[in-house]
Length: 90
Image (cartoon, helix red, strand yellow):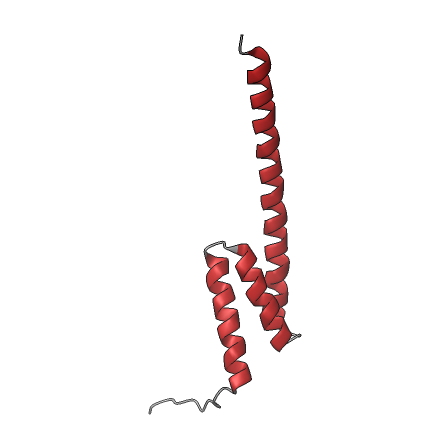
């Protein structure tokens, strides 16, 4: 006996939401966090109670905050190294 499931066709709005989430997930997987967050936010406009989009926006924010901290630390180290070089090159 073959098992079949009856699926209701997606509405255009549901299809748009699924595409938005898929696009966001694709960006998230390759760590393009800003575009991922943008697409999750767009998905939330279509479905304000979408828990996956809400959760992923929070994840993106945490990862972007960490990314900025790392950038500032590296920038500070670079400035210190350049300053030390300029002071002690002779």
